Image (cartoon, one colour):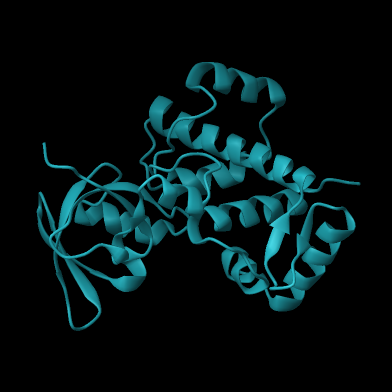
Amino acid sequence: MELTVSKEDYLKAIAEAESEEGPVIAATLGRWLRISAPAVTVALRRLKRDKLAWVDAKGRILLTKKGRAIANRMRLRHHLIERMLHEMLGVEWYKVHDEAERLEHSISPDVERRLIERLGPGGLCPHGNPINKSAAERRKAGLQSLWEAVPGSSLKIAGMHERDRQLLEYFDRLGLRPGTPLTIASRNYDGTLTLGVASGPVTLASSAAQKIWVSPVLNP
C-alpha cells in the first residue's frame, strides 16, 4: 500500500471531524475538505481497498485500527506544529492551523521527536483542543457546545473548531479566546445568543456558537 499525502489528509480529516462534530458521513467529509461527492466516493473506495476505513450500514465512515493509527500520527504532528508556532515562535493562535496544515507533511521523524521532547506528546493546542479526543469524550468530560448552554450559565471557553480562519479572527476581535470566562445573558428570538464577557456584551449567531466548546465555571 502506498501511503500518499492525499490519504493522510483524508484519514486526518475523518478523525478531526469525529472530534468536532461526532459521527462522520460522506457529506461531512465533502464539506470538511471542500470536495465534491464523486471525489469523496473515489477516496472512500481507495481507503476501503487499503483497509484504512469502512462504511457501516448507517453510512458512517469509520477508521480501521491501521487507519486510526495513521490519522493519530498526523494529528500529533499537526498538534506539535501548532504548539511550536504559538508557544515557541509567538504566532497568533488563530493563524497556526493553516500554517500547520502546510508543514505537517514535511517535518522529519527527528524533528517530530525533538518537538515531543520539548513540548510533550499531549497538552492543549492554541485553540484549546486536546489531541485525539472525540466529541463524545469531550461531552463525557463535561464540555458542551456554547449553543447548548442555558441563560444564566457561567462558563469558560474550553476549545474551538479550528479550520475556519476567518471565524477564529472574528472570535479574537470579539475577545472570545480559549480560556475566556463568559456568561449566557440571553437566548434571543432571532436565534442568537447574547454573551457577557469582560469587554462587554457580545451577540453570536447559532452557527458561530456551535463552533465553541465550553465548560462550566463552578462557584467557590
